[in-house]
Image 1 (cartoon, chains in turn red, orange):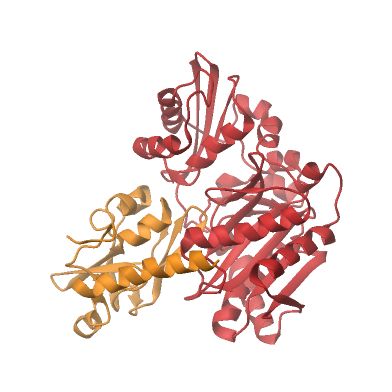
Image 2 (image 1 turned 90 degrees about the horizontal axis):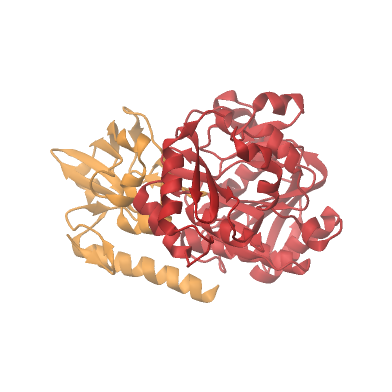
Length: 354
Length: 145
């Protein structure tokens, strides 16, 4: 049975700089140091971490982060902002692209590793599903986020965050929110879109149990065993270098290599009720969208519509193409396909300042 | 224009195995990502480009491309100096999806060893087994997983 290495930092939360430096070392250790796959399971000190090509100033209220002693940093994988802390399991995995059991292509890799996390949740008694493009959901609500980066020729870094419990008021305080009606109901907006292991189980669960479930899922899915180890000397040197060159370096943290960020809103009266759209754009890509209002639909369907549009182009034809993949009659009662499309396009034009 | 297994792979271009393409025009090489890549990646969110005047080696990772939450690589198909980058991509990365061989070009290289390096790239009929192999590899990995 192949032996994988496991770095574990569950007892003592790690700084964002250290956690991310360890993760960036994982694929390097495979490609340059001959290591077998390495799984890093850990918890961060309270931190807000943006995706590699996000505008950190647009994503976070850095003054509030500082006041509340929330660390902030930039990871090397894609996607949006994640709020990490003692009740969120962070997962970093360095694995070769051609590792047996890992499906091919970008979609295949996400699918393979999502399956492992779904198994882990199943081990805890929670039935989760994969929500394209890159999230795990339970009943239409996000419970884990996934991202990845091809840092070396043949090995990837895969990141996941699994919500054991989650502080929505903290998130609302430290992330930029749209300054319109939505902000009045910000809590319910987000609580309808996010769930946690604690909520699903209806009781507290300790982090060791969650981590054990993840380990077991990897063991079963890849038919491997784990050796719990510390980074070796070569890896420690690499970790120090990443800490210096990236995660304590303002040029990295406040990098300007990102698409232009903007937010837009629209409110449209429809036969089904008021339809409100909140749109966060990265360049011409929809980074985040919220479809809300007083119409009748289900949380699951609204999240389905929103997910179909996330990380896709905000051009009309693309919006229509992606919506049509999940659209069905009366998915939002009294709101037509065309009305929703127009409302989204209107939000794109009606930009606001956070 | 050649279509191989549903992928548009123009036969006048040269292809690197990491899915960048090269078009030779007036001694310079225009570079982009092929149709197989853009279809697999989906909507491109951001392209992290090198600077003009940077030197690159054939096969070197000279840029990063984000689609959804995945960050992939742009490999230089030939060695040389980067003399132009496509600034339109700053505002509209979907050009790579919509016009991978046209307006979605990414950069131009002034090649330093074009003649010998073109031989390392795939061209014409040599592309058919490559596309077949890429499709087969993905199917096999999906089947065994």
